[in-house]
Length: 113
Image 1 (cartoon, one colour):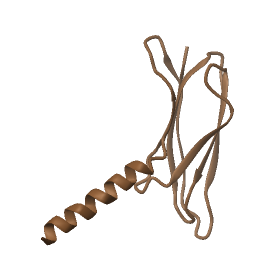
Image 2 (cartoon, rainbow, N blue to C red):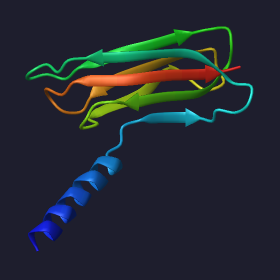
Image 3 (cartoon, rainbow, N blue to C red):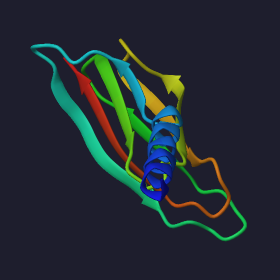
Image 4 (spheres, rainbow, N blue to C red):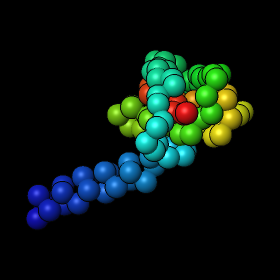
């Protein structure tokens, strides 16, 4: 019975983590697209505060896909487009933690042609 209870709790935690997924995925990567930008944006957690980072990209190709993957263990980040975006030549992203004291660790990839 105890093993069953532990397995159920573990499954609930995993499902909750998937529901709270904080990746930003916009557009589709198709044949002919190339990676225009790839960088890790990270920062340690600040006790009593939230952490944020801005990612700005400007290029000569139109953006077809934007990927921002939250790589933290507890997936407590959030990512938003604050300017530009798909089918434009620039994008501004805001990355921020949702909980006080949590670190920030994102892999940002931008594709285009």
